[in-house]
Amino acid sequence: MPGPMYFFIRAWLVFPASKGRNAMKVSAKALFISVLVALIVGLALGFFPQYRKAATLTENNKSLQSALGKTQDQLAISSFAARCGSVYVEAVKQNYSIASTNASSLFTGLRKYADQASDQNVKQQLEQILDGRDTIIAGLAKGDPAVAQQLQDLFLRLRSIQDSVTAGTM
Image (cartoon, rainbow, N blue to C red; front, side, top):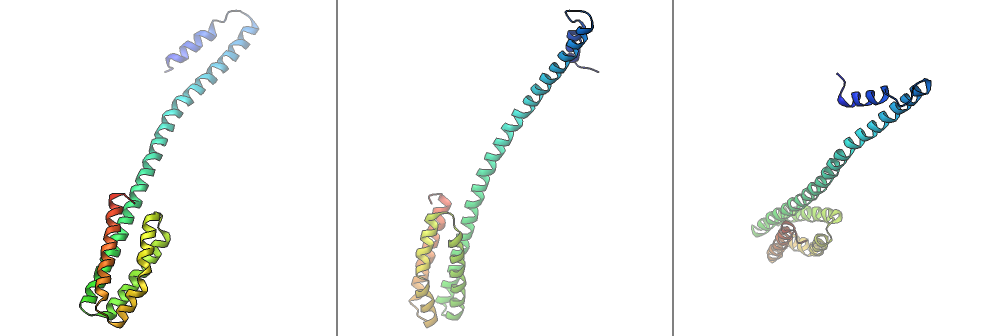
């Protein structure tokens, strides 16, 4: 069943101002213009709500991507701190070969993460940690018990980075 707009257009076209052959041409022209205007209005009414919805979803997506990146950073730093704790435990137990292997793996992972880190403050702090790599690896290779203190300091620095990433101050 036709809607009210149909009846309005039909009434407007059926009763043209003049009679005759030209009246029908004007009516067809008026019908074309009316349909074109109705189509443009309909498209505009459909476009703007969808545009607003898409803009809102894009903004939400950006905020969720940011939150995901922060959570991934927290997880990575937490993992490095846990691995450092494992190296520390092995060093305290004087299992220097296991500690050395785990420390080497830890520093390799830290290097890869620091190279791809987007936060410059995190990257800078990780670079400072990586500067002490050779000292720790050499101390573990020698079986030096003093390396345990360096590992403890390393663990605390990693926890400090983790806390700052969690707090969002970096």
